[in-house]
Image 1 (cartoon, rainbow, N blue to C red):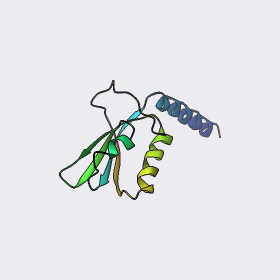
Image 2 (cartoon, one colour):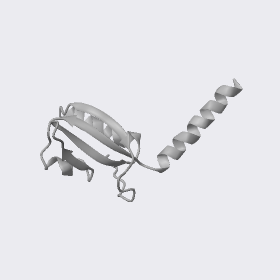
Image 3 (tube, one colour):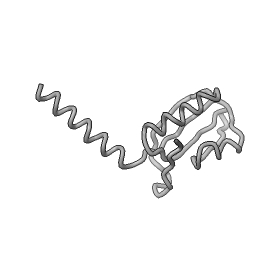
Image 4 (cartoon, rainbow, N blue to C red):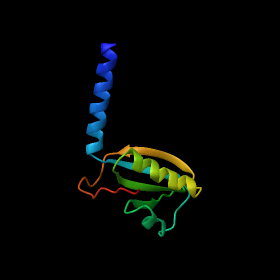
Length: 99
């Protein structure tokens, strides 16, 4: 039982570290999005790709905010292709909390 408690403590510590720094994500969706959608994503960058997808990039403050973004996409019927954590190209970019 001791080992299980140690594992739980390690998980809590890792979780606390993860909450201190936002994770940058690339969210890829099917289809192109008009420029008006950029404001809807609260400062995250939006780009349409040549393969018929659109990417939404930027820092997301925590998992709750990420789930909020994904729910918004789902609610308006935008098909999700992938969600990928990425290394930021501009690490000093402001953190977005789209909740």
